Length: 313
Image (cartoon, rainbow, N blue to C red; front, side, top):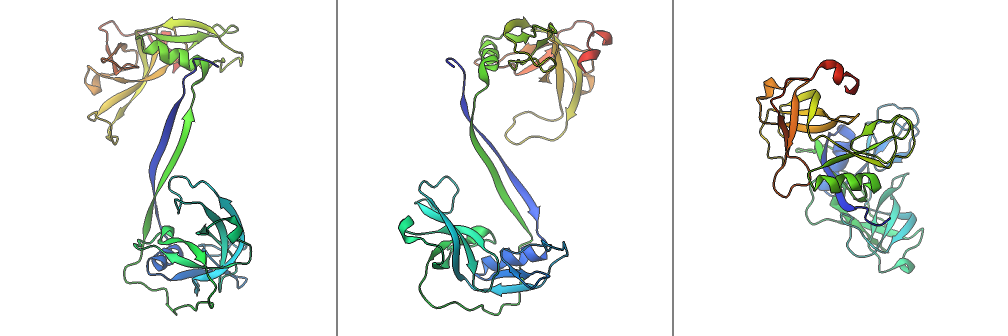
């Protein structure tokens, strides 16, 4: 479809979690170049370890040290590594059952090509030069034709254990808003707001989605709405968002633009936060070059009667 917008987008945030005693020992062990599993109720040694038995749900705590050598149980070749993966050159994803373990650990295998990889091959851990107590302390696995390594006899007790981790969750994708929202965004660049009217219920939805959310039928008739509107409900924000240059407290509101049958979001400015109220009449404030209003401010009109917007709450 010609003329439809698309853009690369990234959703990224740090995920912080605390560790129980088993996971703490496992990650601290990686930092110290020691591999720990945990003994399950059926006697198997699970690597990587889990806090609770997968069969009985009993809490597990019996640590077992295993060797840094092992056997590939299955594999898949990765010809084009992506950002954040263990290696920047082509490698194999492998499941490795470390010597002394009964389950397999997923990681990367540094190999010259897929012909050099096979199920049953012997490998060993290549440790990262700098280790912090994370799975990335294992840089990768590498082919190994030596003798089976032996555990060090470590007890699993550490003076400075890892008690928590921060993992960066990130999603890279290409977003296309579709025909209806492309028209909406293009109108905003001209400081206009357009919605689409449902041919069945005749309601005007802003922003448009290309179909009526109530009737489920396609929409195509464009209707210009606003620019003024009414605050239907709002909240006071007291926590400053990272990378957002707005001082707290401020007000974020649902605003029903004149002629629209759905309220949209907008920040309220030009008025003390504790004077914002339901029914407040507002208008958009644009900044030079912006593709959307910076905020909405009071128009000075009398407040709207509750009955005129109660269906939009």
